[in-house]
Amino acid sequence: MLLTRDGIKDIDRWRHAGIKLPNYDVEKIAEKTKQNPTWLHFGAGNIFRGFIALLQQDLLDKGLTETGIIAIESYDYEIIEKVYIPYDNLSLLVIMHADGTLETEVIGSISDKILADPWSQDWTKLKNIFTNPSLQIASFTITEKAYNLKDFSGEYIKEVKEDIQKGPEKPRNIISKITSLVYERYLKGKYPIALVSLDNFSGNGERLFGSVKTITEEWIKKGMIEEKFLDYLTNPSKVSFPLTMIDKIVPRPSEEVKKKLEGLGLEKMDIIKTNKNTVIAPFVNAEKIHYLVIEDKFPNGRPPLEEAGVIFTDKETVEKVERMKVTTCLNPLHTTLAIFGCLLNYSTIAEEMEDPCLKKLVEKIGYDEGLPVVVHPGVLDPKEFLREVIEIRFPNPYMPDTPQRIATDTSQKMAIRFGETIKSYEQREDLNVTDLKYIPLVIAGWCRYLMGVDDEGRPMTLSPDPLLEDLKSHVSNIKLGDIESVKDNLRPVLSNKHIFGLNLYEVGLGEKIENYFKELIAGPGAVRKTLRKYLECE
Ligand SMILES: NC(=O)C1=CN([C@@H]2O[C@H](COP(=O)(O)OP(=O)(O)OC[C@H]3O[C@@H](n4cnc5c(N)ncnc54)[C@H](O)[C@@H]3O)[C@@H](O)[C@H]2O)C=CC1
Ligand SMILES: O=P(O)(O)OC[C@H]1O[C@](O)(CO)[C@@H](O)[C@@H]1O
Image 1 (cartoon, protein in one colour):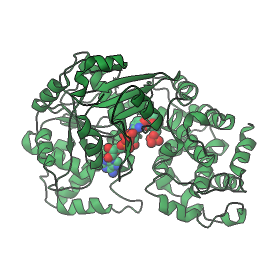
Image 2: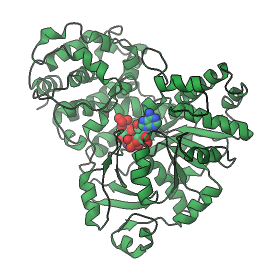
Image 3: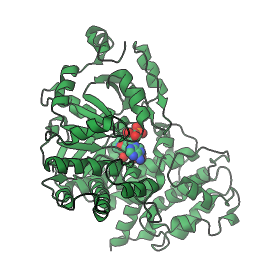
């Protein structure tokens, strides 16, 4: 069986293999989308195919909408070449249930794909869609670092600097590209639009707004665009930047799943790793559970996504629910498992949850240290959410999620995942920041991880991180088994407000983290020994 528009016409074969097909005519929907584009999505990676496209598929299946989503790739063009074009933009969603059963479904709601590349012919096509009054949404899953215009020294990154100099014609950076496209929409008729960040960090919509506004102001200063564009951009009835909370674990495609699909008779299911490190395949493996909460600010309307389970609410509620998930009930636990999982040589998150020390560590971080500072968001219950994460989602043995994937870009995540809780302890009169034990232990674990040596003393490959080289340079003089070598080497890292959102020495945690670190580097096996000591586990 081939995953192509022609291939899925052989309905009986797909049904016989137990694979659900779209309940609508994929080609007709693609045609209607061309006439009347409503939704563009930037970042054509795994979460888009496994979650966002599924929501629209649900509406299409129910006859509640008439158009699909157009996938835009602005960074890793190989994704389009290798997993969109050969499969006519179809993807195969594989839901991994905890009892080992797979639920498979062909996703047909991605109606077209476009490169956001000013040097390609697609750019004109993209501009035409962006200036179409029918367009309601441009959404984004482009990873957190894509929103950064400046490096940690406060300088614009090279690509952004060049875009600022050259103006909106041929931008290279994603934020400049978005600004340029919104400017085209303004010029064409000041039509309204919602720009929806679906990336996984606090205040995502506000950060998107801030970045687009910065580029706008720079171009205005240089006289490259009309000043009045700023009025349009900052008018929420014209351009909105809703906050969102997105939650679904979509690991990289796994070889085991690929084999199972081949067993069902599917052909050409190869997993690829692009030159830009995206690991992607014609299929996406994911968990069933998911949550999406969005601030209901769509000046040009939107599909009735509430019918697909999306929670639309006010800004304050999204903020609370997002803080609950990203700063307390899911992502800090994930990062904890990533760091210690790499050090202890685990290859899946689920296996780690069978390790009594690691399970206890995430329980301590979640229930004991995180929950006391969570504000109940109303729409979801934090304690129940945390229970579901610890008891059901992370331990799912069929989820091929790895600590190495979650360890990607940890430097970008520390401030949100741990810094926010530390700040809350500082602000609350009834809590004492120096009572925190386990969050500091994880931060020490991260420094130990950066040494690039596992708990047995063997070299380990570190996951990509934009600050990796700099961070490694601070621990490069520290030797496993030599506590004296620690000296002041951790100070530049632990005092870096860009990394943690605060200076850990100023809040009284720096020395505690250094002491944990010394225990973690005492020699081979010291990571395990330290966990046993502080968690009283076997
Ligand atoms: N995978 C998951 O479980 C979830 C992911 N997310 C969010 O989605 C993001 C992407 O996740 P996946 O799609 O799974 O990853 P992926 O690796 O499959 O795809 C990443 C996408 O981001 C684009 N990208 C990366 N760096 C970029 C840059 N500098 N400028 C423009 N585009 C860039 C890539 O080209 C690709 O389209 C995550 O970082 C997270 O914020 C949110 C919830 C769940
Ligand atoms: O650490 P990351 O790369 O944001 O990934 C975290 C994982 O947990 C999630 O937050 C679950 O929703 C997903 O974003 C992803 O699977």
